[in-house]
Length: 161
Image 1 (cartoon, one colour):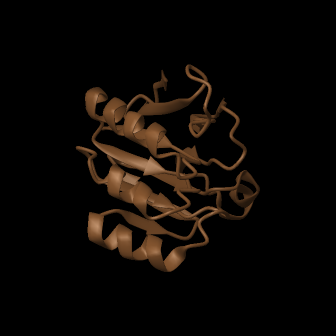
Image 2: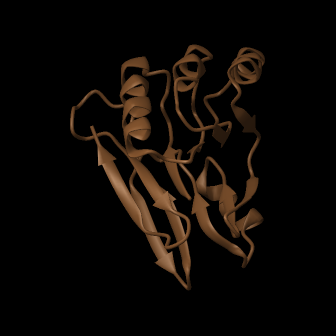
């Protein structure tokens, strides 16, 4: 299974359209958003994904009633962090702020996803991958990025736009 990972879209609708295009072209099986969607119209664009989207809310997701309604309308599964997933025999932890990791981290989590800092991070240790795709809400073309993780191998590829 290949999952797309995105964070901190911050209602940048033009970039979200590009993210949807890139994930659909990459043929990911699922998409994980690590928070800071910001406003409900963003979820309407994410509804054009070919894969289901799951994720957590971030500190800038303050329009919760509108986001909850849009998530339900467009089939997105969003929750407060931490979110634990078990896909393809792998245990995954998703948070927004990396400061939330220590309280939720378990030895079985082989993939740990977060956002919040807008900084790309890849840390591999003892068979675990900790990953933040980094900036994707910026205006500088070529500096935005999202990631694709192969859950079987934990191989990672970056998609820049």
